[in-house]
Amino acid sequence: MKILITGGAGFIGSHVVRLFVNTYPNYEIVNLDKLTYAGNLANLKDLETKPNYRFVKGDIVDAGFINTLFETEQFNAVIHLAAESHVDRSITNPLEFVMTNVIGTVNLLNAARTLHKNNPEQFKRFYHVSTDEVYGALGDEGMFVETTAYDPHSPYSASKASSDHFVRAYHDTYKLPCVISNCSNNYGPNHFPEKLIPLCIHNIQNSKPLPIYGKGENVRDWLFVIDHARAIDVIFHNAKEGSTYNIGGHNEWKNIDVIRLLCRMMDKKLNRPEGTNEKLITFVTDRAGHDLRYAIDATKLKEDLGWVPSVTFEEGLNLTVDWYLNNKEWLQNVTSGDYQHYYEQQYTHR
Ligand code: NAD
Ligand code: TYD
Image 1: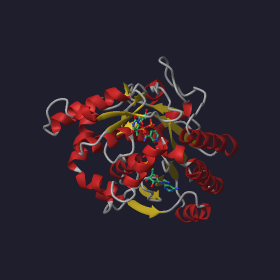
Image 2: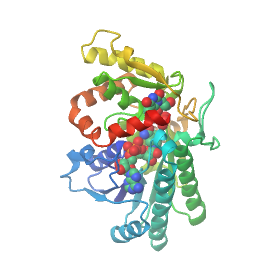
Image 3: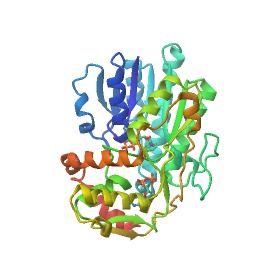
Image 4: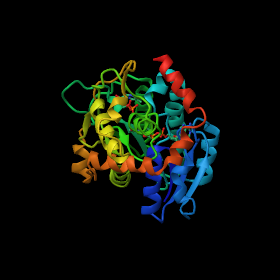
């Protein structure tokens, strides 16, 4: 089986690539990534010498390039993760999100459709990795299930919702063998320090302010990234064509509580007196259109395919903090270049 994984140099993609390369030595894994600011080949250093792994640099928005790649490589399946993924960047530059997340996805669907049309036995699966943010925001009660109506609010979630609709349309119209999963917020190693948890780990290390939007009351349902990769493996191999699965850890936290836990954990790890890091918490202007609460009901995944998370939040966060403390060079590299410039802009536009 030759599988194309898109966005494999990013946060979640790198864990999916590693899991597939190491678990299935008989599969050929081709990782296609544009290497945007979020893509980093250092995330995959340990795989460079593996005979069943290959990296291809390229842009999914370039239809000509994608069509030629599919024609040459004759993939048996696609796992599609490449995307622009940060809500705040989507507020500043929505068009980039339309290009990569919508046009890029449709380019891949078209190329896959051609392979499938020419040889339906050969092309087995188009797996689209998506987010729970397509469902919009919850109030204090309830959870997202697979049948919850789409109601995206940010340009990021609108672009992901659109891409999900295209995937379903290609399944219904052309019988392309698609599956979709919608996952809650991930955390773990290789996470770019623009998202809440890695940003705050980075800032705590450097004794910089921890920017909390609004009052910190927004709720997210956090899942350790390796558990997401395990779920993708199970769904890729077992889900019925045309099906959708929600993935989540039953692990809801208010932002302020996540950051307080992180502060306490890092006081200990950095040998700072208790309460030192909490003093860095700084409440800043809220994000425009900030979704109040996300919560995933992953019962279908558990009942159909037996997946459950493998670590608790405290265990996963502990592993994550240790990873960042042991990989200072990684953090140093990704925060050089235009990273500082981006942050200055962030705080002036909000
Ligand atoms: P990320 O931003 O860390 O990585 C995205 C990767 O895609 C990067 O390696 C980047 O270089 C690549 N990429 C971007 N534009 C590209 C293009 N035009 N052509 C080729 N490659 C391109 O994102 P992530 O957090 O790893 O998310 C991966 C996928 O999972 C996304 O589709 C995202 O919507 C989805 N998702 C993320 C989360 C989360 O919490 N991070 C939760 C649920 C779903
Ligand atoms: P983020 O990690 O950007 O993920 P998403 O917006 O996709 O859920 O943000 C997680 C939560 O943390 C969200 O409610 C916004 C909030 N947040 C902050 O309070 N401060 C920050 O600096 C960032 C990046 C996010």
